[in-house]
Amino acid sequence: MSLKTEKLGSLFTREISRIILEEVKNPKIKFVTITGCDITNDLSYAKVSFLTLNREDKEEIEEALNSASKFIEIALSKSIDIRKMPEISFHYDNSVEYGENIERKIQELKEENKL
Image (cartoon, rainbow, N blue to C red; front, side, top):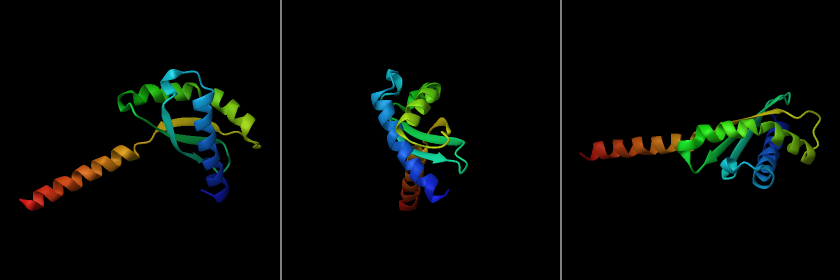
């Protein structure tokens, strides 16, 4: 990823968070946290990662976010001056669960070694 796309990804993360909080009307997606945005070098696609407090409904929330993606793209194009607006797709950020899983395995190994 180039420096330009990294900066643009950071800007997208902030603006998408603001748009979801202020402009999106769907109550299912009001309480999500946008954790990052990876944009392809040709500005064709943007993969937006999110977290939610309610992990059980993450698939339903992801579906709601993706159905609102065109609205978010239009709102984003009004706030960011860019030659080509990437197609946005939302994906649940598994990094927290991955970290918790590693932490649990480390604890299990520590407990086994104490025996």
